[in-house]
Length: 116
Image (cartoon, rainbow, N blue to C red; front, side, top):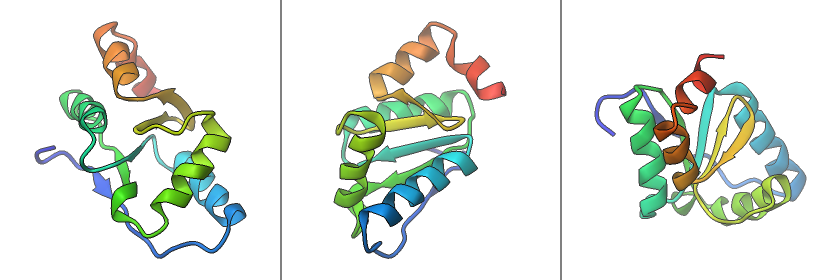
């Protein structure tokens, strides 16, 4: 992702579903852009590259590099309704995955979402 000010967050395993749900809610409410990703996923890379193009700092949670990654992914299903990654949140709202972010960018709708 170059020199863009993005951060990858790793933390200890959380004990239960309630803690994980709270972690997800806290994460997406504190940061403008949050990407729940897997380091090897081409759609995740696509989403991260789009934010790099528009010079938007993002917070990335690489689920395959966390002890609690599978638990986070299972809990994301309850919040968003889908299990696939990436799951991209802008201003606390899930905007979809890699193809969705690319479409928002290509249609000119992404950058205005980042201003607010």
